[in-house]
Image (cartoon, rainbow, N blue to C red; front, top):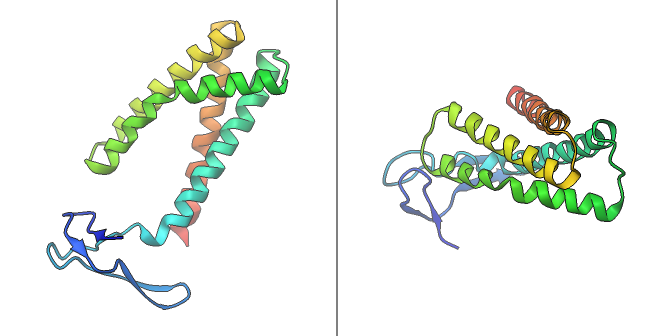
Length: 159
């Protein structure tokens, strides 16, 4: 597997040197002199953060469906609703562009609003519930995910 600098795309032999477990030195690119991949030491934390955030989203989403929409939580019904929410989250594909090009934070906020509105419409169609209840259910799930990811990000920055 050929490694490349995330700044300029120049091929690099290795991304880091490991002196002992947990003690690594990030390598600099020979072309642009920047750190070749500054996020390599955070990969595990990023994966756990995404997993915990999505798990919290699903839990709060199912709980809010049960409480706000009076929807029975049957396996087949649950699967259909979660599939509708997954498909309606298609706007998240635009987040890939934020990894390639620099965008202001407001772009991420706008993408999240598109995802929230798309999830709300999908939930309304699947559950046949009132729109305001669907908005509250989706907003609670998105807010819980945001809260959990912000807390875990703040904790990881402290250490």
